[in-house]
Image (cartoon, rainbow, N blue to C red; front, top):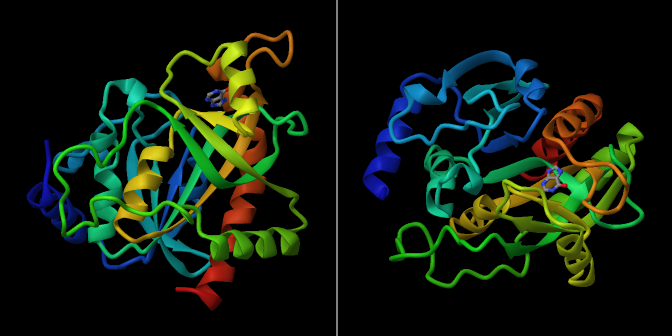
Length: 277
Ligand code: HPA
């Protein structure tokens, strides 16, 4: 179990190797790592060179931190994240996020792959998460509260920043990219959901299902960071078609969408660099 001391040590290990202090971090989900390859003045640090850092084992997740500039804007990109289904607790999963916050990050941009639950969604759709339902059975804030990080009972009314959502919609419009909004339902995985679970998610008001992001969003809100999450629909959720679900299909669809997502993130960063940060 880590605390402020371990966070500080990981922070110092990164700070020694970088000269920029980016106020924004982007976390790249399954198959989206390509965004970090386009950074200028990039410094890449493999996760296994960082103390206490959890290692990702999921295929499609490179496992390194890349610091550089995207369209001139200083940015910290995480290529790969860890998940609850890898055996980590929600508290472990958010260790990197807490280190990034200690490094000065104030805006957290999450990307992920998801299954489309909403009947109007199609694979390849980009969806701004406007709220979530946590069915993951864990919360990163369980345990003694670290008062220097945040309050015991953080408010989650605007867990996904309305002003960042507006900025992303403006950026998307300028790029001619169609964006939807939706509610993300988090399951622990690693098995895909059953058709009955997908029907339940829909009845509960969910539009997307996935196995990530929620722990980090909770911890980011606890720390007072501003959050946006962009989900790429990789597949129709279980039971919606006759097809069986595979991770290969998810990666293939993300590969097809990644250029569009990268264009969106670039335009979004330009938008908030001018108006917000
Ligand atoms: N379910 C959960 N996670 C996912 C899915 C899905 O259908 N597709 C991509 N990530």
